[in-house]
Image (cartoon, rainbow, N blue to C red; front, side, top):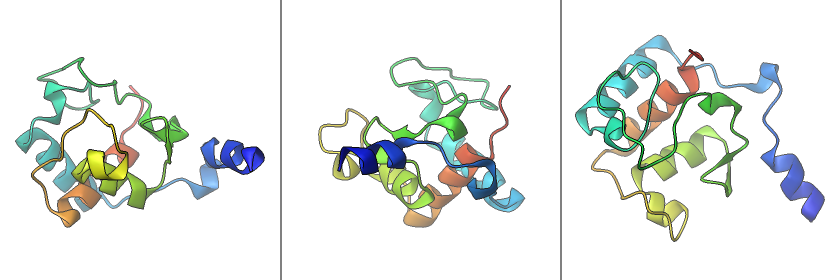
Length: 116
């Protein structure tokens, strides 16, 4: 069982990485700016605000686990972004006032970020 968890935590090989559409990435950035995700996180491409209450999202595509517990997949990320306490009980990130489609677009932006 421990081996399965270890393998699930590894980042996917480059060929298996998510490649979101440019439109989804653009919509995701607009959602991030509208709901002020940058108030708590440093997010590449979002110049202001640059909060530090939550973790920096720089290099996000290299993260093996979301919030230290969930495999880094598009479905898990969208669920976590929309309602972190439901996706990971005990999370200090609040549920966000976004739709499921908007959460998928936010995930697209985070997967589409280029390391700066």
